[in-house]
Image 1: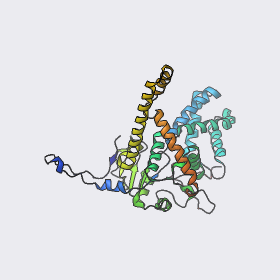
Image 2: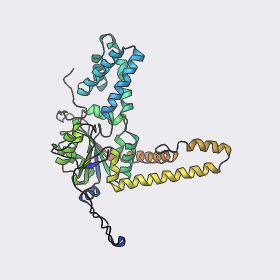
Image 3: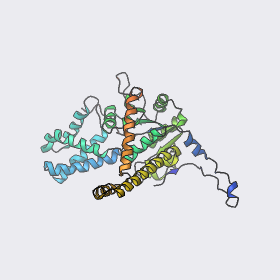
Image 4: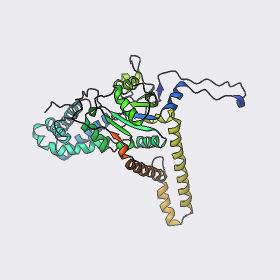
Length: 370
């Protein structure tokens, strides 16, 4: 889906009858001027950077197959148990009175048929492995985050949700190193859309609100919060393009500046970011050409090896790409270690008030269930 902007920012139409040599370049639009002022990106986590809802559904479907094949569940029992767990988990992903492992094992025990309840301790770790397999940050998104850092943008991750559950995602998916600032609402006195959570990120990154862009999937938290905090831009990534909300925004009070069909559409709005991508593509192409030339000049044995190598020279899988990407990953890890003492994160503290997580991507916190 092409990205759509909810304001008029069309450039003047050039006069085709005038002398091309005397034509002036199109004037910079108000939207382009806003994009040029952006120096920091604020990302939502669930259903924006990671496919939480889709990934959890995929993991549950795969686990249902495992229950049938490995534990001799009937098809109906496997489907019912996994769906019951998913509903309970989405309703209450965390309980601060106990550990994540204990709480989830409890949910599995409650969801399984009576004759299979004793298997909860075995089924839970299998679900957890499957879950994080399907929640992995897409490689294209990782590459975009690295390019944003290389282009000089500051990055913050701002997520609503129970502290332990959200920090587990940050740790298991290895996303913390990509960000200068990580904020989880349950560790703070505010959650999105309260403007103070955005100001907290601004204060740490030493940027002004109008220099920041918020990217998220929820109109009522990410987009509304961006407007309340008077951020420069808001980018909306609808959870489903077929949803009624994605089709019409007429009745929405706080409209996004841009609706994205895909997070990678960010490239076309920020020339600095797009330039990084173009540079890497050029270097990758040159690397492939050098590899092909060396392969053609080698002996028969080496030619066989070169042929094997060239077969993987496709976008995203070439040797040049992997070497280049690995170099940037190493460089990024070194920078992370050097700047670790500067990286700012909030963890739950005893003096912080209890949070209402009704706006959380994880949907709720359930301290009263046990």
